[in-house]
Image (cartoon, rainbow, N blue to C red):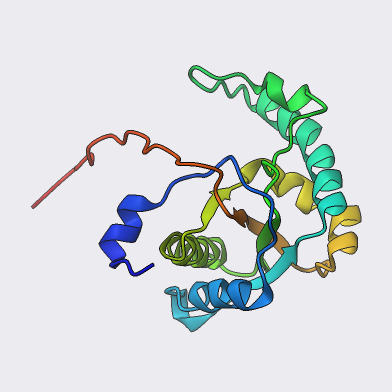
Length: 190
């Protein structure tokens, strides 16, 4: 696929339905190469990556993430308009939507812009994936589970690193319709 940046921005979707099939190493390397071209505060480049493609590991991580996320949302009093967090109590629900690849952008949390840098890298990765005909989705519901010591050990994330931006990547199953977006809210224009 050959897309302009504007076309990729308009075409990118949060894909929650994936076909079977694993991404190969050159494809993943291409996505990581795009990620590290992101802007970075004071040229810090704090990001490091974990790639998970083992289906059993992904299922175990999903099962670990669901109760933690549901509890976080209850504790925070978060209510999603039109949606319920009840799905997180379903044994069948997979927070990774059966995607074959999870890429976790990690960093040592030692600066005011580390998280922002990681999220900029995530956006680069998602736009590159879109331009390649792949689907992506940010899985914020997995962050707490990815940062518990047991998970960090299992995935090889050093203790002094934190999982910041978990993304699933894969081949979309069908079309994902565009979601609506509000017009930009301009607080001032002087």
